[in-house]
Structure formats: structure tokens, C-alpha cells
Length: 192
Image 1 (cartoon, rainbow, N blue to C red):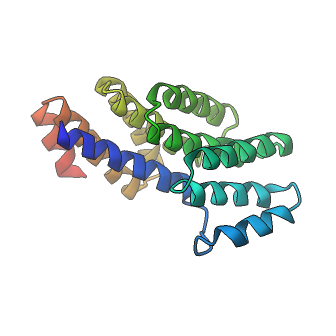
Image 2: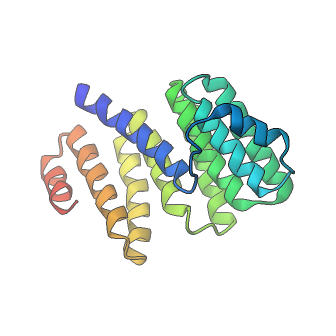
């Protein structure tokens, strides 16, 4: 159980890192970020800034961070900014998972996956599959988790993303280990 719990927190951390991959922190200086926000026009730069401020606030005040993510999503919708809309799901669900609201996170991640597919955001699609898979791990629904990891794996195979595949294989190995499916766990651990 302890190994499973540690793995869940690792997945939560990975989800947050993946959500932030395109953002660059400005030394965590929240005051200066908020000062820039006050003078920002309603454009895609403001969306990025809201996500960055939310991430910076997450350790201080999670509810305030979630409010920033919601504001970024609302502005993204107003601007018809697909990237901002899709990134919302990764940020928001990382916060919900941190609060232990795994069912809500799963529902939002499924919604995000559907939106990612409908808006043809192919660059973000593997991450959305991974986010759903991770939520199933939190809920200890391992077979469902594997199914979503397999979908992400197919995309990484198509685009020949070896680091993405390595990550997927390592996660699948851990899930199989949690299910006591040792042969499958060893297989994926070996190729990760």
C-alpha cells in the first residue's frame, strides 16, 4: 500500500509538471506576477500568466490557485484559445487530486480529453490520456488506467517519442505491479 501511495503522489507531481511544461516561472515572485496581471490586456499572454500565478499560489493557497485556473479557462473560452482551454484540465485536476477529490478530477479529465479530441489538439492529446489514466490509479481502477495508458502509448509510438514511451512503460509496470501481475510488470519495467 505504501508503494502504491508513493506512486500516486509521483503521478500527481508528474501531472502538475506536464501541465506546466510550456510555462516558465519568474523566480516565483508572486507580487510581481500579480502586478503584471493587473496591467494585462485580455489576451493569450494573460491566460499564460493566470496559469503561472495559479501554479505559484498552489502551495500557499490551493483554493486561490484553483480560482486562477478557472479565470484562465474562462478567458481562454472568451478568446477561443484552445491551448488555454485544454491546459485548464491538467492544472485544475492536479489541484482537485491534491484535495483528494479524485472523482471530480476524473470527470474533468474525461471532459478535457473529449475537448482535446474535438478541437484536434494533437500535441496535448497524450497528456490528456495520461491524466485520465492517473485519475484511475488514484481511484485504484487499474484496468481502466492501463486502457488509457495504452491510448497514450499508441500516440507516442506514432510520433516516435521515446521519452514519452519510457514514461508510459514505467507507469504501466507500476500499475501491473499494484495488480500483482508480475510478468506484465517486469515486461514493461524492462522496456521502460
